[in-house]
Length: 186
Picture 1 (cartoon, rainbow, N blue to C red):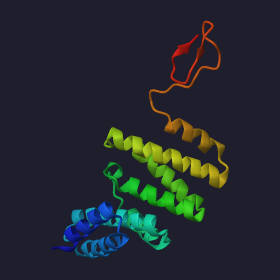
Picture 2 (cartoon, helix red, strand yellow):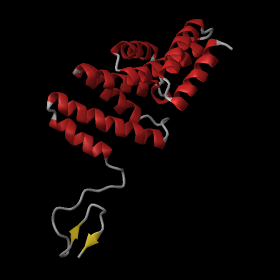
Picture 3 (tube, rainbow, N blue to C red):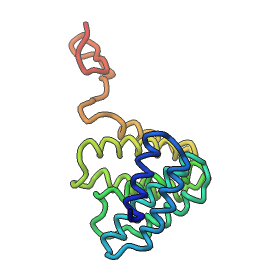
Picture 4 (cartoon, rainbow, N blue to C red):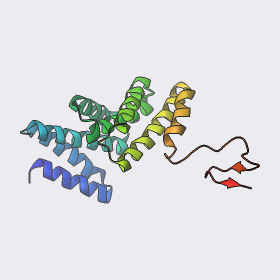
């Protein structure tokens, strides 16, 4: 079995069992597969998978080394027009994790900028956009915690609110108040 297919098998096994040793093996095999990639497209895809696997390894171990490697790999692989293919979002998440672990405001700001770009990309599916907006809201809250940025906190609430939501009215309308659901109450 070639290293790439074997890596994906071990990754699936990790997802199924939670066995970190499987993930470590998948990362090593993905490194090999990335180095052996024959075409630019294979290298691009395998690099993205390796970056995501490294981020998952960080999430299991809280070791910053795989996270730094993930950031370098994903940042180096960004290309024009790739905003909607998942790589920019993967990089944004790695940067956000790194920023939270190290109090690195520059990394957090780069993460927020990437998430804004991805959320505005027309190629991103609606369910993925909701996931990106949720992560953006969290990143903005992280910015508030790191830098006491009240504008970021206010934006996080706006970003997190569903598009159908309208804030409750502060003044009664025709003797009625408005609930959060937007429906009048007596």
